[in-house]
Length: 113
Length: 112
Image (cartoon, rainbow over all chains, first blue to last red; front, side, top):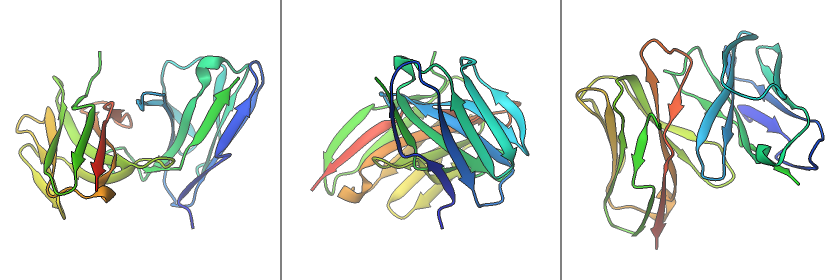
């Protein structure tokens, strides 16, 4: 069974559309994250939730809205997509804190045309 | 300003060679992690170092945490094509729990 699974794997859409990426972890972890990896492979944290509560919210446009219905799920909704949103988005989870092992999903490659 | 500087950015070597990748910062970290990322996949944790001067070995990979906990290195002995990937260091600064900061990575290619 996949530990951290995110869907879809690929997402191609037009500018201005709204899209969602789903993430689920079956590890029983308390903390989940969204990271963005740009074309230069730089991985930057966007959000972090601990037990459904937002604990990290980096400088991300408010077009990006995370939602955690329960501690096993952290979805990412993006409104009014822009060309610059094109990137690979990774969901991750950890037991309690990032001092411990971070488990990543396999990524969602978002292409905004 | 990049908190964690990795060097080199790109490295292409022949199978059997040795290599060292560096991760440097002017900040002190409570711990440093090394990840390897293969194409189309998410990063996978290789090791965590938490004590200044700590050395950890994982088969042909040797990881070292600097005495001052500001830098780390990854040494690979007798590299193999299977070692090809993006190597990322990531650190947690004291007092910034939950926030793991990544370096920009070293893209290693090991040619057969």
